[in-house]
View 1 (cartoon, rainbow, N blue to C red):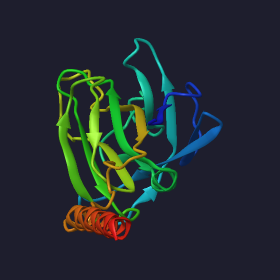
View 2 (cartoon, one colour):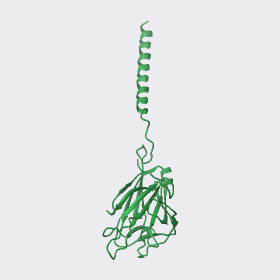
View 3 (cartoon, rainbow, N blue to C red):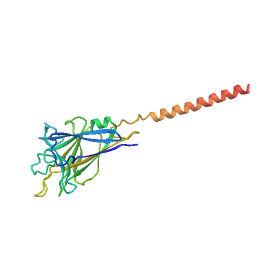
Length: 219
């Protein structure tokens, strides 16, 4: 049976946890820990340049779409992910626990505000764009198989009076006990044929033994 784990990134509400934070969920006596970190970056992604840490913010506002993980330094005081800042999630240890299928939801996209998402196998290097200018909230977006994910504002200048910022609302992971998860190695193409061959050989051996037994009984 698959295990599903969901981390609500607005909790604890309206707090500055510092530049890093862990979110813990326990399912069937197993604890799953998601790591998060906040960064400023000087260059347009995916060029990484030098990332510098910045404080995260767990926002629990009203209405419901104003809830999620943002950046404390947001100049609008909305405490959301804004221009040249990002939230990075680390799922490396979760993959080691068999959690492989990840999805996320977003919040606070208003009048054209959007989010870009990147993935990488190593921290802060080798970023690949996964989503561009997503706006549908909360949505449910599938993440391909990486160990690190980066969520940033898409940089668009929307109408006056808007903050040009967004929130990462939640992330969900699921185990795949019998295969099929992200980053899992596929079976070699010849393995099913090999297994079928073993079955045929076993059947032939059984029939040969049965014929020999019948011949001995008739002698």
